[in-house]
Amino acid sequence: MDRLQFFSPVRVSRDHGHAVEEIDNVAEAMVFLREWPVGRRGPVYRCALNCCSAAMAAQMSAEEARKSFAGFARITGLLVDGGPSPVVAERHMAPRRAAN
Image (cartoon, rainbow, N blue to C red; front, side, top):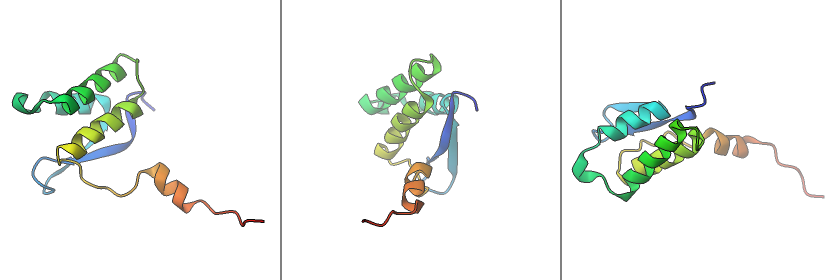
């Protein structure tokens, strides 16, 4: 797997859920961020951009950059809820041990 690939895509919508775009890797997140309107680039935007830049430079993992980008998408109202992440879903599906 490419080191810049996300384990699961970040689903975003620029038009309130009608057209959903899946961001699968750091490069796609960078393109999305670079297209973001200059007048709306606040601290959360800068954090996401810095994290993606760090991942591109191999100074941060793709998953750390994904979390930052997903946080940006959630705060800006662009994140489309795709259900729980695979890790969370796996935890809920794991069999529980009986207490002794």
